[in-house]
Amino acid sequence: MRLAWGARRWAADLASALARASEVTAELRALHDGVYRSVLQKARVIGCTSTGAALFRELLRDKDVAPGVVMVEEAGELLEAHVLASLSKDTEHLIMVRWVESGLSLGGRVLSFRAAGVLPWGARSRPS
Image (tube, rainbow, N blue to C red; front, top):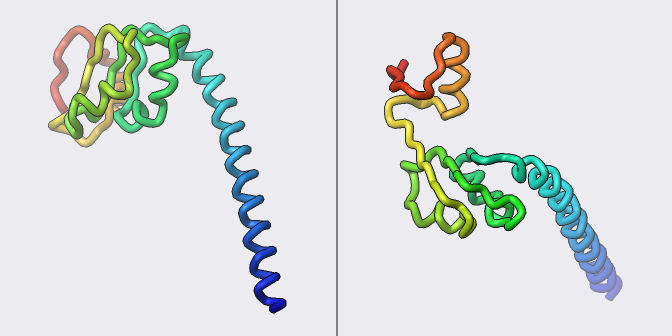
């Protein structure tokens, strides 16, 4: 009989700890979202990966953020509907980027262009 009481007590303590962890996680997420929101409100173009669009869909849909242009990398890996579900009705343009010939991400490509002293904007660049 004593073992059953101990198991119930342990289960109650665990449930309480999990509930508190959930509250703290929500508070932390709200703090992070506030920082991200203040930065994104100033942006005219928001760039992210498809995973980032899914993770931050609430921010991308936020009426205060309202990005006019969203650029999504890794777009060749998924259907347009999955990205569209993350966007706000205020988004005017969606740019979906897919790098076929290279394993480098968009950020990696920009860094490699900068290291070479070349800016890729406005001209086609040869894959390295």
